[in-house]
Length: 456
Image 1 (cartoon, one colour):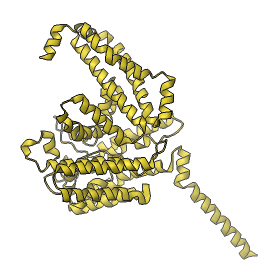
Image 2 (image 1 turned 180 degrees about the vertical axis):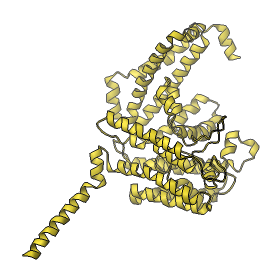
Image 3 (image 1 turned 45 degrees about the horizontal axis):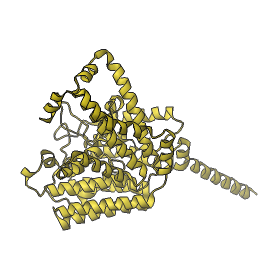
Image 4 (image 1 turned 45 degrees about the vertical axis):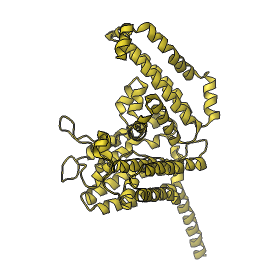
């Protein structure tokens, strides 16, 4: 009888422990937070970057480069497996393919074009096979970051074979003169501080980190702990604030760049030389200028302050490379089309970036009109009216920024079309009207001599 009672107690205890472990499972925890398990895995992985960065600082800074590459590769692969399981083979395959392209095709335009077609083709095929009507955290999320890295790597390697004098000053900074090994390419690709959600950085910048050059104190570990913690604190402020103001923690905010930026700063990757006062700058990996984003009343200001490294990548490797077209507007339009496809195959992305293209053109027209018109420039310079101008600008700015982002967030045609129909395509009508009206207003408001001066 005693043994039977003990058996019942053991069974009850086992069931209790099993229930306890279930309660402690990631899925239960994620549900209690109003997020998905994948989102929770993502945020855990991002926070893991901080202890990994501390380990790197303590034990690997100024150590042999192969050890650092191995550390970055192993930790990156581990994070990939934790989040996506065996689907990590997608990134591994593309990295090996890229290495083979560089070695077999060399510093040729064929290698660049092959890289672009292979890497973008693989990413778009991934989008096609995994797309749903909602935002899902799956292997394509870090793969879009990897795609830009590998395309940039091929272009920099190609530039490295050119005569130094034929390159622009920017291209000279990023051109790769040596021949990267497979381990170097893997370490660059899997660096734990940027593998999941970015930010973007070049192979040359990564190699400076490996060589211990990214420090404000030559020969010593960088004094980047406080700047890194500040960036982390900023991300936490936004997360807590959003959580308090929203009944749910959405997966969108869990992709915030502030956490990853803090890891990059802590390792030293964020070091960006010194300012005019001799203070170290830690913004090399900054993907957002928070104050500018929150206060600037212009659409171009928002674009310039958000997703900075991705925008810089597109400018450096895509927009400026289209100079041969001889048309800046066309180059900008194609760059935005590339960005839309890079985000995914949903029609909402195309509509969002089409609106950005339209809004930026109109905003530049309006700014040029105010600058060149004596009457409008005098009105714009009246100090007492500045708060009114700012309020009007900011209202238009955030109203139509939200309008544009509606399609981006809703993804599919049936969803964003329903919303836009309900408000009679207000944003499209407003900016298309201005696009055609402003040139006529300019003819009236800008004196002929100003026009002639501009033409000269």
